[in-house]
Length: 272
Image (cartoon, rainbow, N blue to C red; front, top):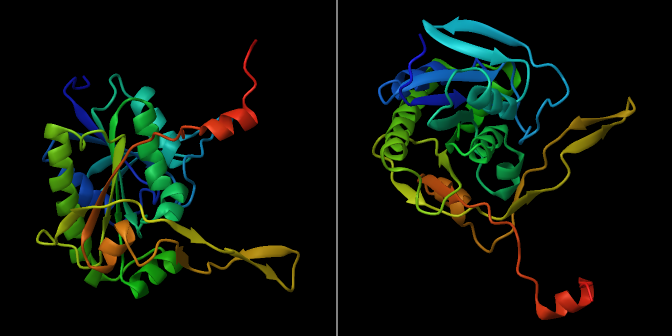
């Protein structure tokens, strides 16, 4: 019999093989029942893309004694199916992450599958928080290339899971910051329970070309040219990470702009 008590939906964009998934499940289980629905394979940089017309296969697996549902789709699929279709009751909270790598700055925020799953939670009327962790450069390169991490990173993952538990516990008991649609949290490489935490904005960032034409074939290969900071100085969530501070960013989706009288005159055509 399925429990009717409030529960947490955990998802990510790194899939069931994420080395931080089981430690995070164990931490969050101290707050409430956790049900984990993640992509069957890594889905980084998929934002809020959804499978839509394609079938989404479901497979139930086990990791370290923990029950996990995997879907042959994207993080937003996992959130949507986990909220609406897989269980008899919807979750009280969606936790997305912990992402292997940061999602600080507007360019990464809009591209992130981790945040895309949290957005899906928001659209369903469920409180949602996304978590991301900056890895040391050599460890992030190893993760990207070989999908593994050295043992020395285990303590960082445990620390990030413990910090995530503390923040989730606050949200679970008292809700998101006032007026927030969701919250995204970025943790630096020095993260532990004593690391300072600060509310920040989303830094204005961009990236240039992320593809390079292969001279031997008619194709383009991934070549990331680096993140560009558009604000003067380094501020917001990106700046906090550079100071080794945990950046907590309440996000509100209020996208419309009030037109000026001049713009109304230029564009509007009102009925007579």
